[in-house]
Image 1 (cartoon, rainbow, N blue to C red):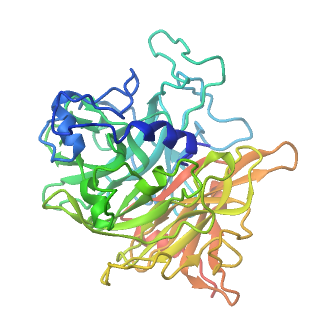
Image 2: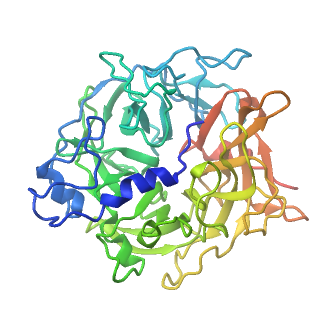
Length: 503
């Protein structure tokens, strides 16, 4: 299972050097804190001040449009997007048999109708995709993928096919380099997009996001979380539609948007906007004016024994004119447990998505019901809370309007629900109040324990007499070994038809 979970070891490995830079305005000052090996290159001197927080005038040098090798485009009735290892339709056999250079089965991008029918594979990639979305005009696939490993051991050189490992099994996980890409569906072209000058960012941590499309020009902006000198930050690149089918969009350099996040959240001395923070798992509202993302603050990164660590969700308004945050509030509490649970992951909240209208967000919260034998990951619930949209942001109370969309006790906010699966990566449909689809990771321990996945649709507002939210499993997609399920934009009609009710 390719997870987005933040582990204690991963953060601890990056945190020690993050506050060591002495003069962020001096391009000769070495960029301490950023990994500096062949797989995570250091930022070049020209682009360093941009990473430190000024706007980014440097044109990207790594834009490289190539044939995407798509197997086909989106059908008119496609409404569900997901990632799967299967090469064709589900069967009793193992996944597709196509493997990347590490020997892993490749996760390709698939689509289906809202009831799970008419599944078809879109990509035929040499590398595994992780988080994947479709642009609002349905012309782009926006994704991150694993194209090289990290310095801790699972990188295999593509030319020499030599394992730089210590002999242990190679594993793709959140520590590996994430390459952010866009795929132009109509022209079957693809390029990486996350650059500051000559430096490609380790981008797409916890997902990609896209703003609205300009109806006149076709231009749009793409957002992602990436490794920065301050641990993790959110960046934006602008896509300008071009007439050349070989290079259908020009791509701007990456601009760091969370430059002033900590001050907008009310942090004061000894912390400030140059303090390290962990900001990932990004979503942008459908009107393009708001963001929601995972947040681990500097006071937690300073906690040497990690006992206070807990991920929470921030809801923020974007200041487009100044490429920064206008205002921000922490909208989730992270639940009761702190520190890190089973599997080494940090307790708390992950993978938010913003409802139509911006009044609510949903996200995954770890519960303490149990853990998986196959992976050691904790079970998780889908949670819904309100945002301060159109209300007073200052002093906002986390978990306002709390509802558990997974638990038999939906009022339980103590991370003690009886849901024994992992419910994660929710996606709101468009129109009305929306309807949420998400991935379910389950275990089948009838023999040896194996991991199985499902797509679940839940109504975030319709509840029965016991307070449980109406929900259905998209059974037609069972057996697809799917994950990272998302709604496809501009497919409102079918989505709401399949939104379950208790009527």
